[in-house]
Image 1 (cartoon, rainbow, N blue to C red):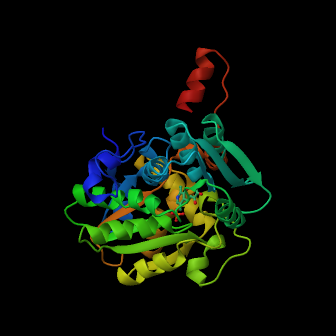
Image 2 (tube, rainbow, N blue to C red; image 1 turned 120 degrees about the vertical axis):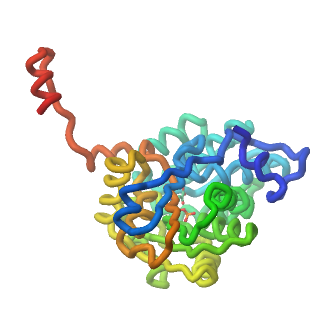
Image 3 (cartoon, protein in one colour; image 1 turned 90 degrees about the horizontal axis):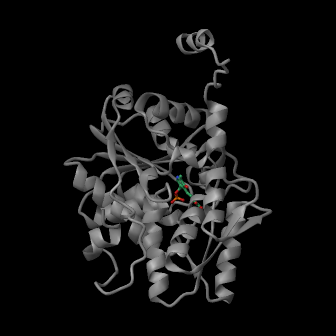
Length: 336
Ligand code: AN7
């Protein structure tokens, strides 16, 4: 499978002979979700972004941001991250032969993401502060040093991420509504850009976690809190663009509680066979909570893989069944 720069080069800011750093991202599955469809009375599809090379949608933006950094002669890339951007930046930096550094909120990123960033050889800095503080500090740092910033404030990130909208339109002949988790608000901005460039305008429903819902309340959240650590963000960098996308698409930005997120997270795994991370489940949680508002055909973006956060999974799942090594014990254990 070609990477997304190759697939969509005519709609991306890359010339034929530009260097491309790719891990074969994009072209992710779109899976029909019968249980969710029945509950909301619409035809619902899941866009499985966890199937990207590092397990999240960030790879779409990162292939473009890191390719552009290489084109510009950068030697190092940096980002602030709640985890997935860090994992992706670290992988693409490794592929490009660049130095990677990531600043994450100490103790607040999921285990899998930390393992990825470390394994890819990035310098992982655990900030005694939250994501918003980390982003403010890296923005200051790149003003002083020649390091490429690969957070979604980098326009190449949005260019890459808009391709998910192209894929949805390629796969579906009709799309009325897109449901999407919102944290730093780069992805929802990118989808809207992609839809507009393709001449489509589905409604956008963005969902934030109740304890980290600055766009819902119209003001910054100083100490954001949610089980969905990926979207534990109180001051989104793409605030205005995201709100403009909501207005233009006749969309809504609304909040879902941690319990609602975890209910959707378990439902997706147990009934649809799709294991996503908690932040990703907020798209489905929001659709289940607020309904499709008359839309017939709906896509929910599942932004990251469930394996990113094994700890939350184990806390939410049934316990394992211990068993002695005899056939009688195995029978009891299996047949229950
Ligand atoms: C799984 O990795 O911000 O609204 O630093 O990892 O574009 O921020 C992650 C965000 C949704 C929200 N789902 O997307 C980071 C980071 C998952 C995520 C979002 C994130 P944006």
